[in-house]
Image (cartoon, rainbow over all chains, first blue to last red; front, side):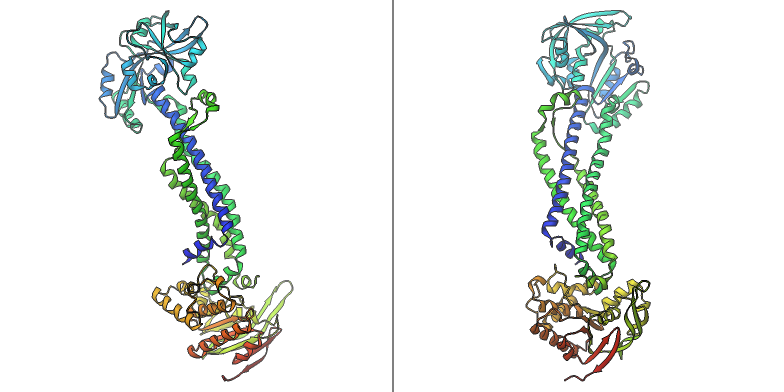
Length: 405
Length: 230
């Protein structure tokens, strides 16, 4: 019956309870929704990072990541690629030549990373071909095609079918240059990446750099599922201990950090909100205790133990908080479901977001487990918030409490 | 046989600052089945005496024995349990739990005792019938008159099958009709169930009903008159 009394007690002063419930509801909604927006944006950033920029795993010569020199090639032949492709969980492998170069137009020049790829394989590993805003991805039959980012095109002041000159250091150490024609322009949500990466056919760039046909600096490996990354990585590292094999979260440490940091951030954010709410709850429950001094005195007089009085106050706080938590979680889930489907657009901030590699649209999302942890956190907050008012109640002397008016 | 024995009872408030002697050396005893009123002007020590007899307050010296159990020797936890099982309380301002119905208010105390559901339900209905509220079992206190609420309080006090009921000014907030009804019910329960009732009051109507009237003044018993039942 104590449970029933506690539940009914919270509705004795409806207005006050509704105010507290609303505060918890809105506090949690604000916390969950903003966490969801951030999680959604970061998920998209990671998605783009994996699917457009990095792939899940990359294989390099052990010295290539440090020096980026043309001579640090992967062992010749396609044995490595074929063997990796045969591993469980691997969807596609693309061999890439990566060379630092200078891209020049008639107007100006800038440093870029040239990626020589086999278009057929590259399209299985990367979704860059879907992000073309003009032209085609290394069109078959065209002579020395190059695909560049919109940001680079603007910087070099060139257009589709314009000619650019790529100057680089060949394998023999000499500076060499070749002319390429823009066959496609892509635009991703990462303008810095768009500005610094250009794609050409592997055969074309290998010939220009005097590298053997089929030589490559990098194998980009796409997996069927991101959750398989660590397992496949370990398998690959076991097969090729002499090579540098790294997952996306090490290739781009910012993405790795975001993944780890986001979990802590979401909880820290919610804990701060709950702490703020806790003070409101303590205040309300103190008022409840002070208003009911006589009644609490009567309950203790007729034989209600201190433990039960404590439990009653704690349950009232718990019910008050959890009612708000359920409402807040429900509201958040509904609003997030809407924006997950339709996207939450920040069009006015597109340039700013894309400068940091983020899309200007968020698809808010939080892991369902987050709600469970949140329920536990709310319950813990309520229990902690009830301690002081409950202790106040326990300190009452029944005889004195009964005399209060 | 004595249900309550009070020996050399003293109660001094603010002992270290300005001592106020609320009770000055009282010796009293109450037998089972008494219907007694403790009367006296405000500040005479009636409520303090009742609180000490009910284990709600501690005496400065002296002792209170209830059925051979000395209250002063019980731990706070034992005292709470003792009150629950042996003493019924009726307070001046009804003091029912406002969110519970009449039935639930009466049942609540038996639930604290851990009595089985069936027993609780039977006893609750029996008591509410006895106080004339068989038709209002599902009404919350706010839907009952003052007299009706006090009758629920009496039923609640009896629910735990206590050895005696302490009633502190039970009729102070009631009109004369409700007072008569309440007193008649308590007298009937006293006679039929041999339940001991001890009131603190300055209501003449209660004094007239009581078969023993203990008069207090300045913390002392100045008269103790027993009358036979009419």
